[in-house]
Image (tube, rainbow, N blue to C red; front, side):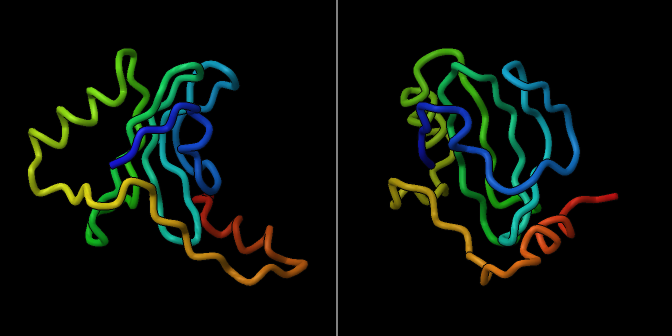
Length: 112
């Protein structure tokens, strides 16, 4: 579990489903080479990021909080003692080899 001071740092991949209003709100699923994330973000607010188990439908849950994000993360850790909080940073996504058609490969994560 980590805290991001800037909301946009929690965004990975491309938008799949949800509501994306620039500078107002980002809620929904995002696809990337490592799977999918669920985000509920508002600009100007810190974000609590929870990396989920590989068996979960999402790799990351990222939610903006209005108050102290660090305190929120601590409350989550206390209420869910099985959360692995041993890594103080988010795990990197696997990186595909870059080619001239890489953008097309990313597009496959969009649900048409």
